[in-house]
Image (cartoon, rainbow, N blue to C red; front, side, top):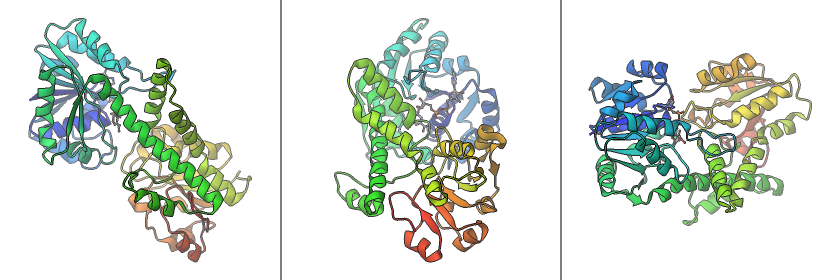
Length: 435
Ligand SMILES: NC(=O)c1ccc[n+]([C@@H]2O[C@H](COP(=O)([O-])OP(=O)(O)OC[C@H]3O[C@@H](n4cnc5c(N)ncnc54)[C@H](O)[C@@H]3O)[C@@H](O)[C@H]2O)c1
């Protein structure tokens, strides 16, 4: 099938590469010339495990190409995926500017009947706007459908190749048939493709992210309460996760959620609810609990050092909003760094993937270390922000030796409290007793 993906970011690139891998003829188009130039040379604009090999192989074998010529990408395709960004506007609603720009371009340049699938996360009712924008100049029949994406950064290729489910909101048999054919290779294990009306598909994406964010904020608040009452959130998490109605996923407390999706999707969902006059009080609480949680590591640093932080130096392990990605959008590390700098603390950070993004965002306001151990030199404390594998089992003797004083503030509960006590480390984690 001739497929074009418009927008070659985290989502568009993964979608394009995976669709090429199953034999389609894919064009990934973007307005960012530097991104496209790099991709033509197999230089990826993002860090995503397994993606580089896919891009390289499929480009070599002629199944994927990269272009800034949107008109050509549209003209040559019978199926189009829109995967451009939908950042929050000033009122928190998802800004459809890029999506609708693309839609207008589609109408202008289409050369045949086509299916247009929106992968970008868009509010309920967007398909009608996309349809109207395409219709302005369209000379052929077209079928707009909603195909929200559920991939997780850091696991994106595996998530797309083996999805839990595929959601298709469509209003025509033609669109349903085309989408079923495209997704058949990814659903051989029997996972479902769920067809529904377009509004429900658009809502499913927001409801999924709202639910996941709720679990995280709920557990963060439970963790804070555990700490006050002398309970251990690790035990509580295992205790509730064993209940089949609850399950183990998304129960780990931490320094607050970030990333390009949860914060903006929660805002957009809240906006949709407000515009509809329907209260979504749970979600408003999730958002404010998360803002509060982003202060939790600073509070713990204060427990270790008191209020006089000026002149201290902190080693930060992890800048990305989660492990497996270089994405720092809304990362809790950014809130922590801003607060530390304001208090006169110097910061030396390490991250296995996000250093280039950090340099672009923070410049020389912080120091950067080549290795996680190097970050510790001269630091008063180690603060773990992201749960990268390489931080899980460090050489603690070396950590102790290199730090000025043996203080670890662990935002991801990576280490064993008892072991830290035995090692003589002053250890503060989330929802567990301190050592
Ligand atoms: N990142 C995720 O984990 C994830 C997961 C599921 C859904 N989504 C949704 O997918 C969408 C894309 O997210 P992302 O993280 O890939 O964004 P991104 O910012 O990484 O990529 C968006 C790309 O679109 C390009 N673009 C913008 N306007 C364009 C235009 N008019 N024509 C062509 N290209 C254009 C940009 O240059 C950029 O490369 C968003 O709606 C997001 O909410 C993201």
